[in-house]
Length: 415
Image (cartoon, rainbow, N blue to C red; front, top):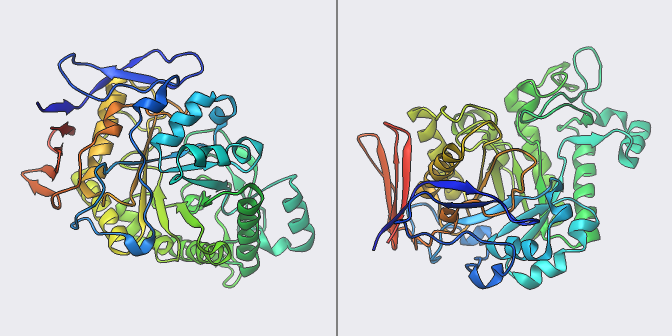
């Protein structure tokens, strides 16, 4: 029998447990939503992420039977109150987790690895920012003030807004092109990995944010006396990532900053040109606060898919994070998850590309499995996607994926 896994409606979360979704149609045969209690017996095995030398391109065959690799940006407050049963569910359903430095994740890493020996647990880092009042901030301001970015008036630059959230006035932007700062950040990342036993790191805010209104000013390049361009800033960001990677060696490293396929072609490719292991867009196909009715144009969708293919061809992992941090009905949330997941599957290499969907807000538990179709066992892809009359499709050993650009619908069908 064939089951189309296309839409889900919200069910109330259990106390202390994850947000659940149930099928709209009683006839649809889908994986049962996971609960925090007794989850271990129902979980599918998690596959180990491959290293760069083992990456395959989108047209190659993948040895994995489950092409969907889940990861989670677990650095909001949800982890602080998570039950042990929910922690186990998170560990056994994900390939990569990103947690903050500190005792919450520091105390859990050994247990997470016990539940899932292939899981990579990475430490979160602020990227090109230093927090006012921290020991690092005070030391750098006293000894190395040139590390701090400044605007045309010589003022320090702080975060004005990020992903629709409020201001972060204590986050001060650093000069990405300064070799001293690059070494400082590499040292900070390495210290947190070694202190808590992380398997690597995730570097936040490495994209062109200072040029899109998220900061109080545009940084000036001290070497030229004029403002950085998006391209020169991203080139410096790539250099920073290579410096960090050199410091942490074989530990896994990925960063955010891709934005979308059109910007990748223009300037964010400098991130993947570095020695980083992978790169993320945290706006996979949509901006977090945009209307649920707003879907990407055919041109931007094609560019996004091409971006993933280029990353895979270059031996880099792709991380796609779709955010629904806006007012949306359960049906709209489900439709967007299916659309974003289907687009990911059209170009997913099955071995080292990762997917994350989070709703309904930045405060929700991003590490919980929200929709059963994220656990679909499609099997290995049988070839690359096809595009006919505006409809993308791709076949897998155990099913098919389609995405229709004519009406912005998608389906994930498991045989």
